[in-house]
Amino acid sequence: MNLVYAFAIAAQMGCGVYLLLSRHGMRILIGIVLLSTATNLLIFVAGGLRFTAPPVIEPGLQVLAAETANALPQALILTAIVIGFALVSFAAALMLKTYRSVGSVITSDHTDAEALGSPFAKEAPRNA
Image 1 (cartoon, helix red, strand yellow):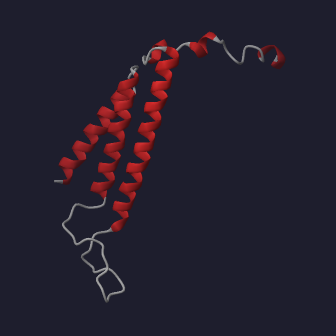
Image 2: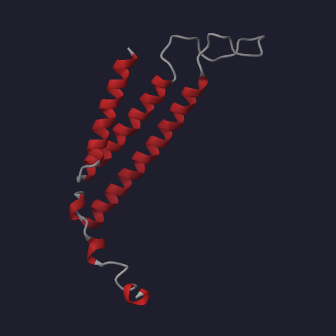
Image 3: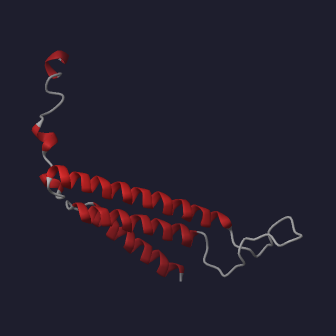
């Protein structure tokens, strides 16, 4: 069963990387979302897929029972969800700002930096 999860996560990560390498801004954004969710699934599967008791200390005990779930993957997934959401929000805001200033989300249309010329052209005679 773990092999099925591994192939599903690999397929999702592959789709995310493929979309991330696109020239269209919305595809890049969807690629970021796919990579973020694939990372969450990877952490989830790496933590082990077992039916275990929740990590709650019973009244009167000082430690968790032996058959309780490991709380570390859950904490890592929650952290990864927050980081992924922040990354997607930042990318969406950046894409919206780019669309408003340039008028296109196609990255091949973003040629403002090339129009300014090379920053090293002025320094070349100084170094010679």
